[in-house]
Picture 1: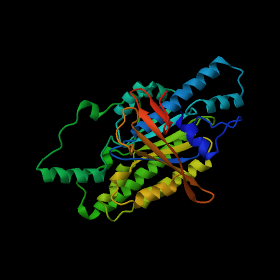
Picture 2: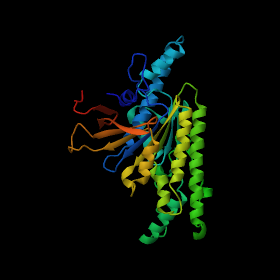
Picture 3: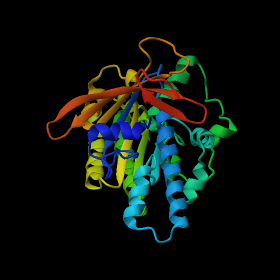
Picture 4: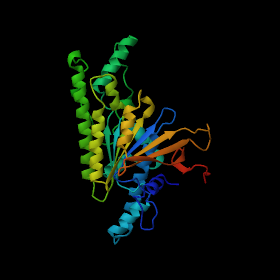
Amino acid sequence: MDLFSHLNWYSGDFMNEDGEPIKSIPSGKLILVSDTLESEGSFLIHYFLQSIFKATSTNNSSNSNSSSITQQQQQQTSNNVVGGGGGACLLGLNQSLYNYFNVGRKLGYNLTTEHNKGNFTFINGLSTPYRWIIEQRLQQLEDQGIDEEPPLDSISQGFNPFPTIHLIDNKNISSSSSSSGKNKNNNNELKDILFKIYNEFINDHKKRLKNNKTLFIIDGLNLLESHYSTNPSGSNMDIINFLQYCHNYIKENSTTCSMVILYHSDCDEDSKFFNLLQYESDLTINITGLKSGYSKDIDGQLNFIQKDEKNNTFSRVNPIHYQALDNSIRFFSMGSRIQ
């Protein structure tokens, strides 16, 4: 079965002329992917990218083979292809570009090729340490009696097969800031980062053709939230406000963009922030293990919580099982067999 048609069938908003659910990422939606250490959710990020790039390649191939195809036929072809086509803007806060690149090769797409086509933009959130991360690390090294950080390997130092966007500059980082102005500097740093992310998302969306969809991906949000663990004077409402700005922009451009956020819910000591994320999101995908235990044919379960904006209520969509293979992800209804 297809994940996107499963979601669109329940929402009822994305149907083709035959009344069948469209096999594309729901447009105009903010989607929260929640995982745990036991059931890691990065495979969904790679699945979204694979679906977009494969659909884009299929659409381009069909357009080149038929020069007389109409705009309506192009849209119908795009809707019938899993993923829907378009491009992606990925903010990497969880994995390095090297990881995304290698996984992409296994799944059948090349990030360098997609970037050259204008279909992929990577915002490197791990290239330069954040001020509050530096302060945490310096304290850890001091507690361990280590004078300086061990050198990084060549891969961690930089893997740049194509130009990427950096959130912050080394020149703006100073680990020797005075303790009196530490919290103030950290607050300003996070707000500047959130402002830059918002602008980069919008600029990337505007660069694409009107007919192409853009998927904004944040993988994952926990790194930015970690700012508040060392800065009690701050408020994680800065992140919620940032997401509200993004959500409003997505609604204004509901036919051409969506957003997916990965968040490790078990890293949050209390559930307040996670509840706020769920309330802001149009759809929450909770990734869990199997209640029955281990199975060689099933890796876990996807649970869905869908928001009804008109009534401001939440409803559960029938869960599905998944299996993560080396070069694909398979989804199927609960109780069914893998064909």
